[in-house]
Length: 578
Image (cartoon, rainbow, N blue to C red; front, side, top):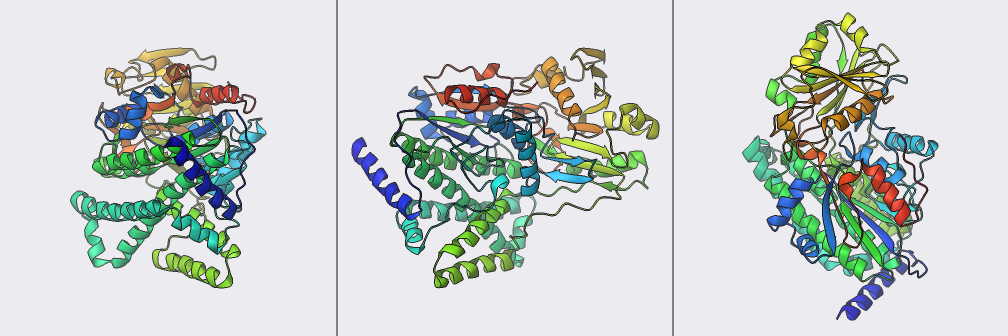
């Protein structure tokens, strides 16, 4: 039976490969590498999902002894760009968060803008970091890691795309040979629309707007369709590359992260996303076992997710409004946060693919695709192009938040402002930030000396790494040392925070949302969050082949994962900076 299935899949993907102009790689006995990243799923939440039967296939494979599961700390800040850079390039010192502000050139930076992502990749490569994915393929990532083929990837948007070179008959074959995939897409779209309606009405009444505004329902349907299509195409692409014998392969799934941000990490919508992910993992694992060469599969997360309460919702004012009150009402402030709606980003990717498809189809087929793309643009306002950076040359203070992590910049001064200068200019600001119940930690610097300040005391980290504690250690709160409270001990936490404070793009002050043992304060409108400290956001997971003798618990961060993969699969020279 296994041999029959293997021959069926080989024949199926051989036909598709010819139609899509994707030749098979030369046969080799070397083990291939498959990396599947599940964005935002913590080790504790995965454990509970496995025990509750929400991911039955993955649970069975672990119980059979094919894979082992372990927790690990992937990096700080606990955000995708930092971890992905460390994994793919072996470096993490170019990224202080998901969003920040570069004072020297007066420009806000965001990791959903292709131009900014490409700039970060250029910095990583200029520092000698080689890409882990050279010769392989990358799907739905921020960074391409040097992959020969990178599709739905921000650092490599543009041709060649997934459907580059596909003619009309080839496109029809892709659809006809995957009827189950079409049915799964339709189910996902309907389910997502119902979730939006039901939980919108229950939680904040927003669901009723669809009854008054049909365009809102259409936009939600198109966003759900784009999201479903993207994940199915990623799975399809990985399956095809497995049968072609391509290595290494890297793909990211953001289903859970999206749902957990909007609803919370253990909300029914987020938990249902795990069942969908289990189906994708089953398909990829099955394809790997039927492939022409042996493969090793690694499934991991880049960070976890902690239940959150938005700062503005709890305290009836935004962080920026509070800062302005503490400084002077005449201070101009910019705290614009572009919502990271990845469902919209899915349509960006898919629209780019449709533009490429127009070039290869017959004139009649191209007109159909062009009309469909124009309809989506016109009716849903989805394809807005690359978001433009907000104009902020006149703002006195810039705040850029990444979940529970916020960078505060005094924009008038082009270089980092010492803590003493901030205290002299705005004597009330520092005390007000430290005493605010929604802020757990305030970080400033004086040259190479970093100050970590909480309500009961401060820890001072010197350039040589030694620390001094004055009053109560702000990193030694007993509640934060609970099993799901903190992965890092106070000493290691202090070193990570000091490293962050010294990065060129970090704020003059860095603020971390308060953690009470259950929820963390987010500076964005989120019910689940990550990017700072406290709770499951610090505890990622790694599932790896049982025959590999790994201890991820002992790794410093994702750079150690990069180093292991570089050695084990003869990828690139290791790049592990201080």
